[in-house]
Image (tube, rainbow, N blue to C red; front, side, top):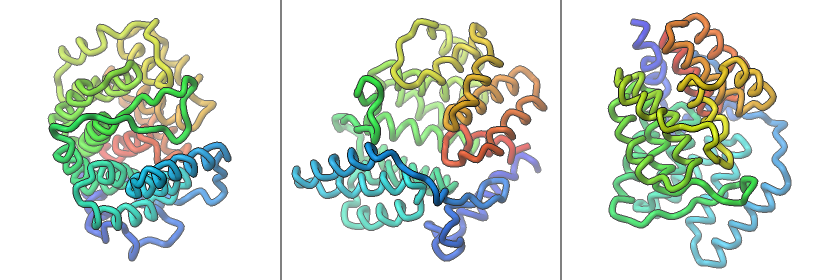
Length: 307
């Protein structure tokens, strides 16, 4: 019965209006799998350079006569502001007019993940995967560039990566495995490969494929050069047994996103080593920290709801 809990809670949310406009107060973005309201942080101040950059990229899209891309930047800005429901509404309208645009489904699917509408997210990512079949991949620009100003993800990798996550948090590990294998195949740099291998490894362990999981981390070296996915790299080294779990957990306390990312990974490490109470303690720490839109938080939340 415990294993059904997250799906029962999810079903209660998913059966509502797809955007939940008629069932939630305006300041509530979603209901967690543990039944808590997830609200927009009304005091969130975005860096001015982020707003300037998005305005610039939107203008480039308009100058290039690609209004769909401009609308996507509007939706992404709403996401950065924590207005996930508004982002979904905007993307709904764009998809009505452009039903064969894979990027629209990819970005709406992301916001369905944020609002815990996992079935809708899976449907969007699966649709996006169909639409990109046989097409050339394209780079997706970052809202804020990394240290080297080199985008690390693409349309194809983001579709497969997010689809894998949606399958993972709903316990569909065989489908998650297939999605992550597609993502690894499409990944062209260390950052995207490391991020995908991280979730792929955990998927394989969840799916009982320990031997293959061991092969995945065998080639992860300490001196691997990454630009922005250092936490994923360190967590893979923890799984491999060459990096100290307590040290990385302490390092991750300084940053909210890092805390959620690292917290879920370290909790998982305790989980697969039979320390279930410690795993739950770490995941609860992530949940209580409140960075509820991050993937590490969503995964921690799903673990807590399933136990």
